[in-house]
Amino acid sequence: MDVAELVRLRTRHPEAIAEAAARRTRRPLLGPSGRLMILAADHPARGALGVGDRKFAMANRADLLRRLCLALSRPGVDGVLATADILDDLLLLGALDGKVVMGSMNRGGLQGASFELDDRFTGHRPEDLARLGFDAGKLLLRIDYDDPGSLNTLESTARAVDEMAARRLPLFVEPFISRRGPDGRLRNDLSAEAVTRSIAIASGLGGSSAYTWLKVPVTENPDDMAEVMAASTLPAVLLGGDIGDAAGNQAAAYEKWRGALHLPTVRGLVVGRSLLYPADGDVAAAVDTAVGLL
Image 1 (cartoon, rainbow, N blue to C red):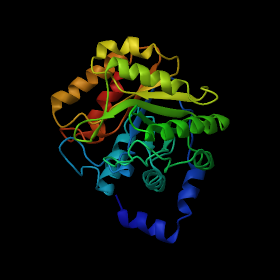
Image 2 (cartoon, rainbow, N blue to C red):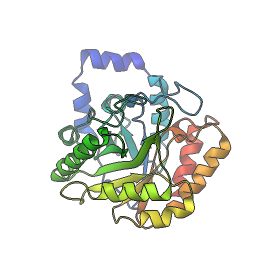
Image 3 (cartoon, rainbow, N blue to C red):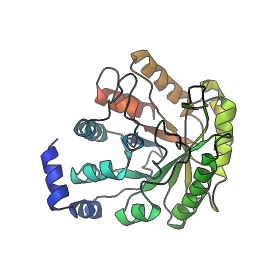
Image 4 (cartoon, helix red, strand yellow):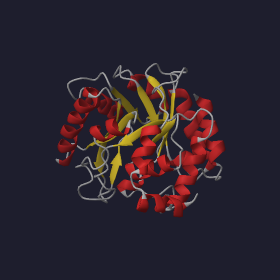
């Protein structure tokens, strides 16, 4: 990974990013299998740098880019979800040809901030995604019934759904019912009731659901997933999240994904930290195992 060359291009030839985007080889969102395997790397822009007990695991950008390039090179990996800074680096590295490129749209709800649920759209705009020839967008929708900031995010999400549909660009909505604990920390409720409610709310946003996808977690009890996913006919992908450092946890996550991937609306996986920073350090093996589930 030649960081000096990336910096040189950014300093001397910033238009190289737009040029790389213009010549990028594109592909349909779904390939012949009808399945998606997307790597997620939009965590740093929200100040979420930790993986398990490693507080700053994602803080080294060159290391993150090396891991992403390796993971993207593995057979069966369809693309990547990230913010503009990371996607720009990957464009300059030539790592996005023939891949699905998904821009992360709202990163203003910084981890641990008092305004975390007023999750402003500080990343890609619909017009940016269209201009760069990217393939989809993604947004995070966390709803706390006790926090007025959720209403701002809810309304902004609905307008983003409209704007993406107007451009015929797929939009992946990641909904959660969330609440703050006694320590003030925000936690997502993964009970079947909460995930079902979040899916129902997200599915009804905007003036058209034609281009809306869902990005959903596996519930606390994976056996509930069939009933939970029956709440909507929108296509969905499963998210990965941070499953920690224990190899047993990683194996358990694979099993959770395996069962849910059989459901009719579930079309694939969008996974980041658990594949890019596996407990044993073997990124290629972690990615290959996840691809095998599809």
